[in-house]
Image 1 (cartoon, helix red, strand yellow):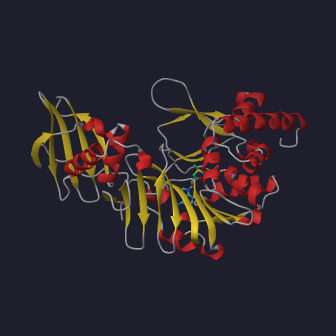
Image 2: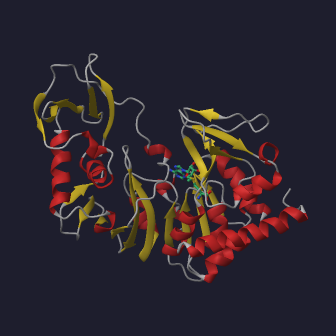
Image 3: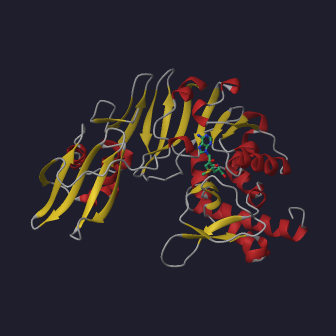
Length: 395
Ligand SMILES: C[S@@+](CC[C@H](N)C(=O)[O-])C[C@H]1O[C@@H](n2cnc3c(N)ncnc32)[C@H](O)[C@@H]1O
């Protein structure tokens, strides 16, 4: 397939268009990374993938292959600025007879090219630097780095053996031979250390301590932090020997969470109707789903998750459950606003309201006003500066 001359000619032109798009959007800023985008054939890394269907109702994913979509349309889609899914629920797809799927969670993909480009630019690499990538996935971003820095400078870790094997094959087909490791990216790869840069394309609840040991002082760690309720966003940390510190980006791009850190299946115990103590709530459950307050809620109750359902045929209540400490908060509407019933060792809604109030006091800032400091003993997100208000990341 990759040697079909018509396909190759079409792909060259589509890559140029993709590079133009990424440059216009400000994501691609340097000739070196532009050359990588123009040269690395994304179609070799995603010969088949899934896209979200437009059908109303439950989220459904439909297969896209040269056979299902037609050669030209498949190739056009490959080179659009979209994330394409390549695995669900950690199970391999049977491509001999692919079907639409629903009620499933993506576990591997080729990331949105604009996000890949912008992260690679943010990584601030120079000739001769070594990079450790966490989350090889399809191998596309790995290939971009091999093009830019040379295969010998790139190490990439993928937790899923079959995903890693496919990435290896695609990279080899393009002539790239980075050091590929199958394992949990949280332990890094000490044998290849030290690295000048570390980039993670899956999200983590905290910064794995091994990364601090394996990235050189002055080096950069670029990763998304995420919780069980939502993503916190992208952080760029500068390592200073045993510790690291840096800021969140303006927006909050989201990656699938590292497999080992996914939320437990059980949400925790649902409280009985008479459990806990009740008070009037200052904020209703809307804070959990709105942008800034939702970020604060994730920081304030990092082990919690929530869902809403009608109680005893009455109005819809929102249950916030922390299965780690067995704490709960249940928000119910009243004639004059909201009331909250809380129980367990942590007063979850007190913590959420205090964090949201602090955020409002500071002028309701965006995520770029927040930063992270990681040391051997503690990991905290701070607001404004490292001595500002702080929230610990989960241990
Ligand atoms: C969004 S995909 C990576 C996209 C990839 N960089 C690309 O361009 O195709 C995230 C990948 O991280 C992998 N992953 C999840 N947890 C991991 C971990 N703890 N260590 C290494 N890889 C992990 C997943 O299996 C998945 O393939």
